[in-house]
Length: 197
Image (cartoon, rainbow, N blue to C red; front, side):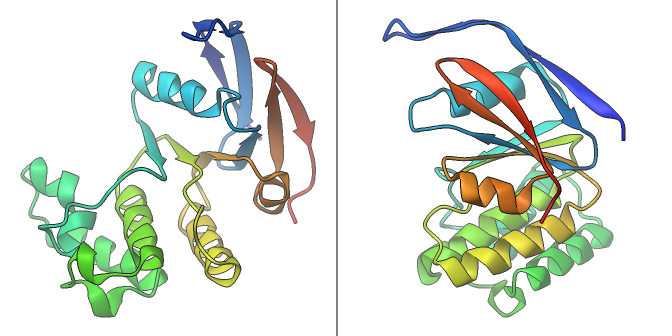
């Protein structure tokens, strides 16, 4: 399987913490995990990657839907901003929303949705867009265990042929979803390989 080698520059934090320059090697068309405690620099690494590389899509738990747009329009937001009105795009959006069991709520607005439905809508918006590398930063947090398993399974099916870096502070979650993962501690990444479960 081909690999993608990603170079990270050194990063200095206001607190005085220093993260040296290092390389992350990930398998293409597979999920690679990045796990570390809160404040270890996971999000900083991903944001620096998203800013410095084209065709990289970064999404995190703090992303929000636009409250004045319904679910379908939120999912198709960036396509519409580019002036695209292709019916095939709408079909793609509907297919993704159906994967997340949201097809009955396409005309609903974010304030009318539960937290779990908003999370699924955000993921649908992310997966609607094409990218060479998807960066998913703690995107499943806050979901109850049953919903989380269903949403992770749907996300993996939709991204089965994509390259994904999945960030979590839960090692058990990383091991369930990723073929390999890195632990981040003291500013350094350590590689771990495993068979996908």
